[in-house]
Image (spheres, rainbow, N blue to C red):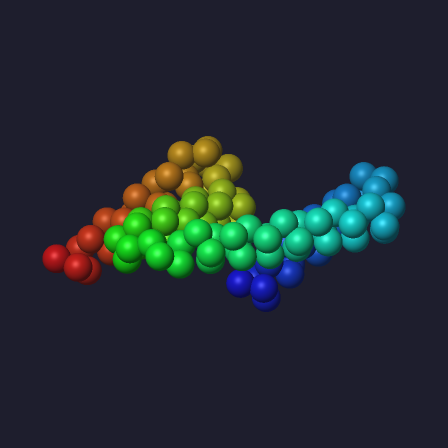
Length: 104
């Protein structure tokens, strides 16, 4: 996950620099994002420590769908350009269909 996010972070940082943000503002923002992510992960770990497997699986499935939708809209720009925002939803539904067929 870390390696896959490095190019996106560099692209965002470059965009912020071109928009006139200072280096300290950009680094402060990324530090805040890292801190918030770590805090959220720690709290989620504590909160879900006693959660049942079905509950955790539901959360993970929702997160996987969100990642697929994000990838479809940002990493497949031609599809997004041609099909609009629905591309993300359709990609996630296609993944769900493939997963369901695999489990049948």
